[in-house]
Image 1 (cartoon, helix red, strand yellow):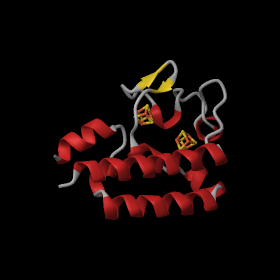
Image 2: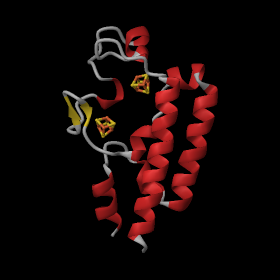
Image 3: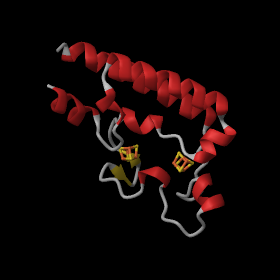
Image 4: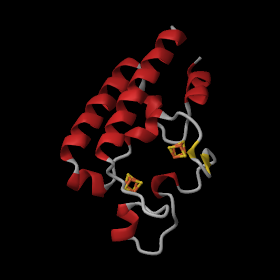
Length: 117
Ligand code: SF4
Ligand code: SF4
């Protein structure tokens, strides 16, 4: 298994997905609460999908986890079809080129590479 190639592919997909999410800003956080939580689950915990993830710091996510970039909740699915289509395309590419285990949320790059090596 060519770990260097996987690492480069991982980084590229991560950057592309991150750029898309920055461009569309679908989660629209306000005071730590995402739009889905504000509109559908009033009083729910802060930090949206990141919840109580151990990688969440006061500065936000402190690691690189590609699977998290592909999380699509009902809010994204309903209101950002173009974004979802692009994310699904990247997700398919990730599965094809890197492997299905890359889709696990909360699993960062180091853990992912360790698990498959
Ligand atoms: S994907 Fe949906 S539930 Fe998750 S943080 Fe974004 S808006 Fe909230
Ligand atoms: S690893 Fe994923 S769930 Fe955890 S803080 Fe980062 S983006 Fe959020």
